[in-house]
Image (cartoon, rainbow, N blue to C red):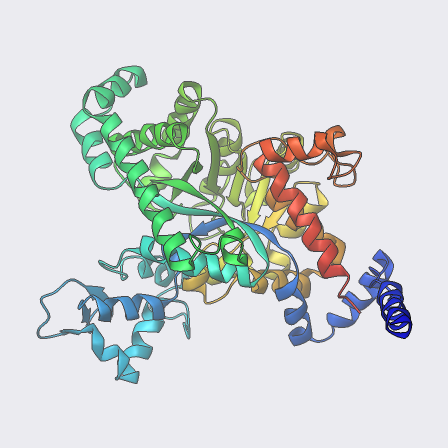
Length: 494
């Protein structure tokens, strides 16, 4: 018995004395990262595992891969229009064949994947811009809301922890209400017409839509039975989309409805504008649309605003069209985040505007692959390094990972290889993606620093004060979790 006790004690002592893996020093991590940059494949594998925080600029319909749309079309007995290479509702006949053919006919399948995405695209009669935006009209009657789980699972696999998905929109009944109400010079009068016409019912319908999105996501991912899986731990919020190419009376109705929905449902993180910024209505009504947002922000001051602005390039619009979109989004549209911001150097007083964005803590959502495919902007023609040089906060995002045939890891890899970024640069952008998110609650960090937590957590995360603080602030919980993920990941770097 004595020998057994001594053996057990020896084994326990040996196990206890095993060295705990140490985290390499920042300098050591950077040396290893510099080696990885010499091999894009090794770099990709590293970045795939690295914590990346959140994806703040993600259109749900554009995030779903063409293969998923085709599988759904076959299961739902939809049709493929072979002439236009799009998914359409039945009945099938003539050029419209059963979508199930894409599961046996490789030629048709490949043609459809190319049509629904940027895969194999070569500019010619059709530009990258036109091919990209045309893809969204080819998904047909397939409901992208059924596939939130696919996007969330992909995010979890890449060590992302937060998503803001653009999915709700003001099309349909909301736009119809706007047509009926018209648009008065006095926005108050028009808003009252919208409210009298049944706006509250449409707000409740949108909340029901979010209920359905959440239920489908949780069911598909199995979150009801196992809530602590990586995919179920991803925090998801939704962003309401205003269709900027709609007639102005419809746009106003969409804006008011979006702000009302975001006020009524905390799962709706904010409001954004979508569709091609160079469209005829988008260009003609841009200033008016920003005035609408300004008005809505005064009525619903707590609603967050992110705006697509500056997704333009020389030649796409006349020079005058490049001069004011980002500035008006910031100064009139109350944008807390700018999506794309590519044409900043063509704005009036770009240096002054970037200083204003820095001082107002406006983040730019950078979409490198999308900007290359749509605008032909890449490398030293991109404004990404200029924002960083000016001290403007940036975060990498996917825009439409399904249409672009990538994911967030690809955006990190592209940024590193194109701009020589360090690991510390990537870590800062990942932290930005949570700090500038629309997740509710206070930050984990002391303002202006990612080195010092707020006073409630200065004594450690396990103190009662910090535990209570994290419980009551979702953003702080996400940021605390991101730091834990970084610590765990960095211990594996050798």
